[in-house]
Length: 222
Image (cartoon, rainbow, N blue to C red):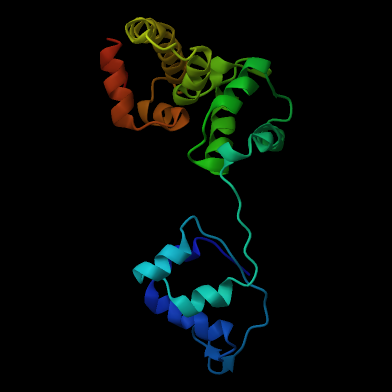
């Protein structure tokens, strides 16, 4: 039995789970007789349970009951070798006829993926929907992922060139704004002007999309 986000479990429920794991019989919901379970438990969490024990938000006895074999899975940005195989796997599941352009794969590798594998899957699906050809290009990626390509192309400033670096950063905003504007307009065309659906495909909020449209002086479509 797989228990996801075990760190979010309320303290009262933790007590009940511990009793079940210790073999205590229990009533099923609506049941008339007690039963026991015979399963192997796999639990996952994004939280530091040891800190939760110290803070009193996670029971010490339940922690040690679950922590017999501990597997630490690094974040996606710490295992970049997994990014492209996962992206190609997600793409093949839904859109087997599409492929990634080389510049696109470079951009995916440069992005930090704060949302880990779930974010990667959402980005792949959204980009596949927006792709106008059989090859997913950088322009098909959400704007916040495209920015990884621009940042990677800007070299670190040398010592004593702070003023020059600031001027370069200001100049670098222009192509990024242009890519963002193009992507937003393509997405709105894809959704026939429906801003809510466009915002979902872009991975931003409706409010953010409206603010950007006003900044671009595009006006409100719907």
